[in-house]
Length: 237
Length: 292
Ligand SMILES: Nc1ncnc2c1ncn2[C@@H]1O[C@H](COP(=O)(O)OP(=O)(O)OP(=O)(O)O)[C@@H](O)[C@H]1O
Ligand SMILES: [Mg+2]
Image (cartoon, rainbow over all chains, first blue to last red; front, side):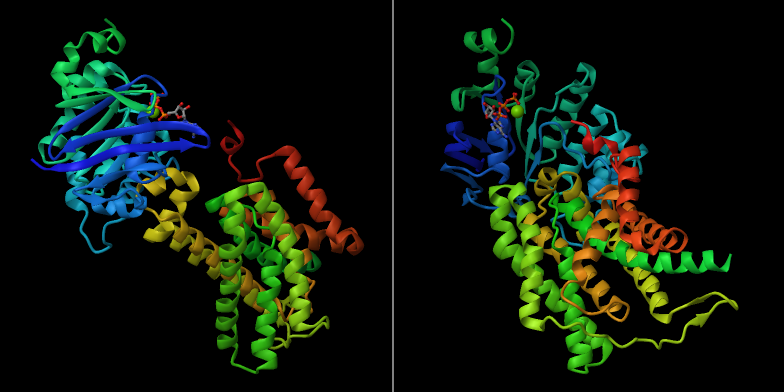
C-alpha cells in the first residue's frame, strides 16, 4: 500500500486564532481513516486545509507524493480530492441534477457522465426520484446524500467527509455509513471527520484524535475504541 | 387612448435601457455580492467609444460596436484587477465606497480624454417614425433598443442556464465556498462576471447614443435610475432587474405625460420608496436573503 495523503506539521490561523498547531497524519491508499475530536478541536479546519480552501501558515501537505500545500482547490479537485463539507453546503436554488453537474465541474465537457449518475443513483436511489427538485427543498438526509453524490461526481480518489452524521436520525446515519463503506470498497480512499466517535471507529481502519489543534492520539480504530481515555472522553465511558 | 399607448411604448423603450444597465448591476451583485456603483459611467464610456469609432473614425457600426465592447470590458477588468480586487481584500465596505468615487473619477477622466462638449450621434436606422396606427408610432431607434434588450436578456438567460460557466456563476452566487470545493476558480468567475457587466453597459451605451446627447455626464443619471430599477426589482435578481427597469421606464413616462414632466425624476424615487416600504426585499427579491 502506498501513502495517498501526508499531512506534515500543518498550522493554520483564522486571524490571530491558531486553529491548527502542527497536525501530522497519513492516509494509505484504500483506507478509511477517521478524525475524531471535541467541538472546536480543528477538524473542519484540517479538512479545509487539505481541500485547498484554507491557507496553511506552516507545514506541508502532499498527495501521492506531490506537494499540494499551496495548490488551489480547482487543481486539487482535478487531482482527485473532493470534500463533503460540514453542513452539506448544497446549492439551494439549483436542482438536484444541477448540483450533481456542478460536482463534475472540473471534468471535461466531452466526458459522458451517465455512468457516474447511475453509480450515484445506485447508492442513493432517493436522489433519482428528486432530480428536478431544488437542493434547498430536500430533507437534511437527502441533502447529505446529495453532498456525497456531488463530491463523487469529480471521481475522487480521496474523499474527505466532514460530519456525515450531523443532525440526522441514527437509522439514516447507519445506512449512510454503509454507503461510504461501499464507496470505499470500490476503490475510493476515505478520510472522515466525525462527531459520532462510536460509529466512526466501527467503520474505519485507523483513527486520529485531535485536541485543540494537535493530534493527541492515533492508532487502529479497534485499539482506540478500547482505549480507556478515548472511551471516557469520546465514547461516553 | 392613443396617447396612453404611445406612452407605454416610450416607457417600455426607456425601461429597456434601464433594464440592461440594471442587469449589469445585478449580475455583479448577485454573483460576487459586491455592489459596483460605477456602472453608469462604464455605460458612458461605452457610449463615447461608440461615438469615437462610429462617428469620429467613421468605422462600420458593427465594428464600432465590437471595439467599444472590447475596450469597455478591458477598462473594467483593469479597474477590477488593479483597484477593486486589492480593496475588496481589505473590506467590502471600502470597495463599495471606492466604486462611488470611481464613478466621479471616470467622469473626469472621460472629460480629459473626450472633452467636455456634447456630441450628437446620428440616428442609426433613420429618424422616420414607424407608424403602427394613424396616431401611434415608434422611432426605429426605440424599437431597436427594445429588440437589443430582449436579445441580451435571452442570451444571458441561456448562458446562465445552459452553459457550464453560467451554472458555475449561479453556484458562486448561491454558495461561493461550495463552488470552490467543486473546483470553480473564483478569480475566473470574477473576471467573467465583470466582463459581462461591462459588455452589457457598453452595448446599452452605444445603442442609446442616438437618443441621448453624448456627454460625459450622461452616465450619472441613467446609472442611478438603473440602480433604482435593480433595487426595486430585488437586488441580485435578474428577472427583478428587468421588471424594475421596465416598470421604472413606464412610471416615468406616464408620470411625465399625465402629471408633470418637471417631476419626471422624482417619480423614480417616489416609486422606489413605495416599493421598498411595501416589499423591502424588492418586487422579486427573496426574503430569505435578509434573514439571519
Ligand atoms: N471562520 C472562522 N473564523 C474564526 N475562527 C474560526 C473560524 N472557523 C473556525 N474557527 C475557530 O477555529 C477553531 C477550530 O474550528 P473547527 O471548525 O476546525 O473545529 P471542529 O473541530 O470542526 O469543530 P466542530 O466539531 O464543532 O465542527 C475553533 O476554535 C473555531 O472557533
Ligand atoms: Mg467541524
